[in-house]
Length: 408
Image (tube, rainbow, N blue to C red):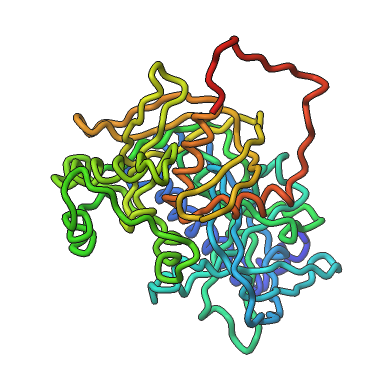
């Protein structure tokens, strides 16, 4: 290769110019990418930590042309995310390509939640894992940007030199989809971004993203007095199901109708005819991030109201317990949840972010209700756990409760 470069320099070969142009293109792409990661630009990394972002040298062998096998009538499925929730995707195509003499296939996905936005829906999701994952690159895989318009005559270019880490590699508090098993490549892709080696940041809640209630939501809230129960949406009703499956938005902590909604939701969850231990706003037709949870871990087992709750940490230790749902009639099943969590939420008085460590059955209630805010119902968790490999610890751990403790 050095000999060819020397000859090219002597002869002024266009081959060398093309190679230099490609390296310049990749370096320019990476400069823009690195700038977008800076906290001041809305990214997850503080400026002084950008030095820990690094890349493999550009290598054209990792730029391949793939043949697309487009897929039709693919079912939607939930792809797990780094924060323990999931996002809905659908397979768009299978990309077949050759790399170092071997044939590989990568599925590329479309994000179901972006279908209603014409601009965003042009973007497809191409995640992958390879033999460098967890070693020289991020353990949960990397992403490559591809758009629908990049496909020409059934072919598309995959440039692994532009592979990048999800925000979760640098900071907690993000929802990064984790690549499915079928997106593993049994080869070392030493191209694109390397593993981030700097300190991890803790993402704060962005109050600027919070919204007020829509006119439709206002009318629904004001359709009854402050302590009047509301209709609980049912998954068996098609229109109700759409709302239950829609991701909710953060709400401004000082919205004047929060107090009314709070009172009506509490009356609903404490309805003697259909009592519950928690309720989320989507269950009463309001796609905003507020929940009521009964705190079995506190004296008197009070109900407490939470604004914009997020689970920012989940324990590896799991527990299995029976769950039902006010929105799913006549059904109860055993669901596996994290034993303990760290909750982040907005203080209603100050608007500042608060954090709390919660465990046991109360942590289960929080997980159930926060799932509602992402359009996730507990049957979705049943599907996930059927695919996970877990081991029982009965022969290794013993749990006890003080005599007289109430068992929820």
